[in-house]
Amino acid sequence: MKEHEEARFRELSRDLTEDIRVRRMSQYIQHGSTTTYDHVLRVARTAYRLNHILHLKADDHSLIRASILHDYYLYDWHQRGDRLHGYHHARIAADNALRDFAISPAEQAMIRSHMWPLNLFSIPLSRGGWLLTIADKIASTQETVMDRIRPSASPC
Image (cartoon, rainbow, N blue to C red; front, side, top):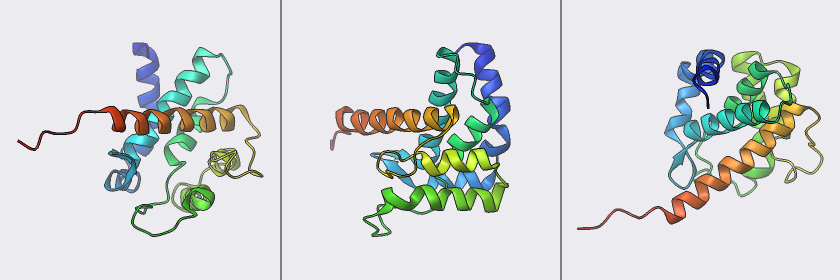
Protein backbone atom coordinates (compact mmCIF):
# COMPACT_ATOMS: atom_id res chain seq x y z
CA MET A 1 0.00 0.00 0.00
CA LYS A 2 1.17 3.53 -0.66
CA GLU A 3 2.07 5.58 2.39
CA HIS A 4 -1.00 7.83 2.17
CA GLU A 5 -3.29 4.79 1.69
CA GLU A 6 -1.77 3.10 4.75
CA ALA A 7 -2.26 6.29 6.78
CA ARG A 8 -5.90 6.50 5.66
CA PHE A 9 -6.44 2.80 6.47
CA ARG A 10 -5.06 3.31 9.99
CA GLU A 11 -7.21 6.40 10.50
CA LEU A 12 -10.39 4.60 9.40
CA SER A 13 -9.67 1.46 11.43
CA ARG A 14 -8.31 3.04 14.63
CA ASP A 15 -11.61 3.08 16.55
CA LEU A 16 -11.90 -0.69 16.17
CA THR A 17 -8.23 -1.75 16.26
CA GLU A 18 -7.79 0.05 19.58
CA ASP A 19 -10.98 -1.35 21.11
CA ILE A 20 -10.39 -3.97 23.81
CA ARG A 21 -13.37 -6.03 22.63
CA VAL A 22 -11.94 -6.32 19.11
CA ARG A 23 -8.49 -7.04 20.50
CA ARG A 24 -9.96 -10.10 22.26
CA MET A 25 -9.92 -11.77 18.84
CA SER A 26 -6.13 -12.09 19.25
CA GLN A 27 -6.83 -14.84 21.83
CA TYR A 28 -8.27 -17.18 19.21
CA ILE A 29 -6.71 -19.03 16.29
CA GLN A 30 -8.43 -18.59 12.93
CA HIS A 31 -6.43 -20.54 10.32
CA GLY A 32 -3.21 -22.46 10.99
CA SER A 33 -1.29 -20.26 13.43
CA THR A 34 -2.98 -16.97 12.46
CA THR A 35 -5.11 -15.34 15.14
CA THR A 36 -8.61 -14.12 14.35
CA TYR A 37 -7.44 -10.55 15.00
CA ASP A 38 -4.57 -10.85 12.51
CA HIS A 39 -6.95 -12.49 10.03
CA VAL A 40 -9.54 -9.70 10.16
CA LEU A 41 -6.83 -7.06 9.73
CA ARG A 42 -5.48 -8.92 6.69
CA VAL A 43 -9.00 -9.11 5.27
CA ALA A 44 -9.60 -5.40 5.92
CA ARG A 45 -6.33 -4.39 4.25
CA THR A 46 -6.98 -6.70 1.29
CA ALA A 47 -10.54 -5.41 0.80
CA TYR A 48 -9.37 -1.79 1.10
CA ARG A 49 -6.57 -2.35 -1.43
CA LEU A 50 -8.87 -4.13 -3.88
CA ASN A 51 -11.37 -1.30 -3.60
CA HIS A 52 -8.68 1.18 -4.62
CA ILE A 53 -6.87 -0.93 -7.21
CA LEU A 54 -10.13 -1.78 -8.98
CA HIS A 55 -11.61 1.73 -8.50
CA LEU A 56 -14.86 0.22 -7.18
CA LYS A 57 -15.69 3.20 -4.97
CA ALA A 58 -17.18 1.22 -2.10
CA ASP A 59 -17.35 3.25 1.11
CA ASP A 60 -13.93 2.72 2.73
CA HIS A 61 -15.11 3.30 6.30
CA SER A 62 -17.97 0.79 6.12
CA LEU A 63 -15.80 -1.69 4.23
CA ILE A 64 -13.03 -1.56 6.83
CA ARG A 65 -15.47 -1.75 9.78
CA ALA A 66 -17.32 -4.74 8.30
CA SER A 67 -14.04 -6.43 7.44
CA ILE A 68 -12.67 -6.06 10.96
CA LEU A 69 -15.92 -7.28 12.49
CA HIS A 70 -16.73 -10.07 10.02
CA ASP A 71 -15.41 -12.77 12.40
CA TYR A 72 -16.42 -11.07 15.66
CA TYR A 73 -17.88 -14.24 17.18
CA LEU A 74 -15.43 -14.30 20.12
CA TYR A 75 -14.82 -17.98 20.70
CA ASP A 76 -12.34 -20.63 19.58
CA TRP A 77 -14.20 -22.47 16.86
CA HIS A 78 -11.64 -25.30 17.00
CA GLN A 79 -12.46 -26.02 20.64
CA ARG A 80 -16.16 -25.29 20.71
CA GLY A 81 -16.95 -28.59 18.99
CA ASP A 82 -19.31 -26.99 16.50
CA ARG A 83 -18.89 -28.62 13.10
CA LEU A 84 -21.32 -26.14 11.52
CA HIS A 85 -19.34 -23.04 12.53
CA GLY A 86 -18.77 -22.04 8.90
CA TYR A 87 -22.50 -21.92 8.26
CA HIS A 88 -23.61 -19.72 11.13
CA HIS A 89 -20.68 -17.68 12.44
CA ALA A 90 -21.45 -14.81 10.03
CA ARG A 91 -24.82 -14.30 11.74
CA ILE A 92 -23.24 -14.53 15.19
CA ALA A 93 -20.53 -12.02 14.22
CA ALA A 94 -23.11 -9.61 12.77
CA ASP A 95 -25.29 -9.85 15.88
CA ASN A 96 -22.29 -9.30 18.19
CA ALA A 97 -21.09 -6.34 16.09
CA LEU A 98 -24.54 -4.77 16.13
CA ARG A 99 -24.75 -5.20 19.91
CA ASP A 100 -21.27 -3.84 20.67
CA PHE A 101 -20.67 -1.28 17.91
CA ALA A 102 -24.06 -0.24 16.52
CA ILE A 103 -23.02 -1.07 12.96
CA SER A 104 -25.01 0.23 10.00
CA PRO A 105 -27.42 -1.98 8.06
CA ALA A 106 -24.93 -2.00 5.16
CA GLU A 107 -22.12 -3.19 7.44
CA GLN A 108 -24.39 -5.83 8.95
CA ALA A 109 -25.31 -7.11 5.47
CA MET A 110 -21.64 -7.30 4.47
CA ILE A 111 -20.79 -9.34 7.58
CA ARG A 112 -23.77 -11.67 7.15
CA SER A 113 -22.89 -12.43 3.52
CA HIS A 114 -19.12 -12.89 3.79
CA MET A 115 -19.35 -16.70 3.79
CA TRP A 116 -21.06 -16.91 0.41
CA PRO A 117 -21.19 -19.35 -1.38
CA LEU A 118 -21.06 -21.63 1.69
CA ASN A 119 -24.13 -19.78 2.94
CA LEU A 120 -25.88 -20.11 -0.39
CA PHE A 121 -28.75 -17.70 0.27
CA SER A 122 -26.66 -14.95 1.87
CA ILE A 123 -25.43 -13.41 -1.36
CA PRO A 124 -23.43 -10.18 -1.14
CA LEU A 125 -25.60 -7.37 -2.52
CA SER A 126 -23.14 -4.47 -2.50
CA ARG A 127 -19.66 -3.69 -3.78
CA GLY A 128 -18.44 -3.71 -0.18
CA GLY A 129 -20.05 -7.08 0.42
CA TRP A 130 -18.34 -8.57 -2.61
CA LEU A 131 -15.00 -7.02 -1.66
CA LEU A 132 -15.23 -8.43 1.87
CA THR A 133 -16.23 -11.87 0.60
CA ILE A 134 -13.38 -12.00 -1.93
CA ALA A 135 -10.82 -10.55 0.50
CA ASP A 136 -11.81 -13.15 3.11
CA LYS A 137 -11.24 -15.98 0.62
CA ILE A 138 -7.85 -14.53 -0.40
CA ALA A 139 -6.70 -14.05 3.21
CA SER A 140 -7.96 -17.47 4.34
CA THR A 141 -6.15 -19.16 1.47
CA GLN A 142 -2.92 -17.26 2.19
CA GLU A 143 -3.06 -18.14 5.89
CA THR A 144 -3.80 -21.80 5.29
CA VAL A 145 -1.23 -22.29 2.54
CA MET A 146 1.53 -20.26 4.21
CA ASP A 147 1.09 -22.16 7.46
CA ARG A 148 1.48 -25.46 5.61
CA ILE A 149 4.66 -24.45 3.76
CA ARG A 150 6.28 -22.46 6.58
CA PRO A 151 9.16 -24.49 7.98
CA SER A 152 8.40 -25.81 11.42
CA ALA A 153 10.63 -25.00 14.35
CA SER A 154 13.49 -27.41 14.78
CA PRO A 155 13.14 -29.67 17.84
CA CYS A 156 16.88 -29.27 18.52
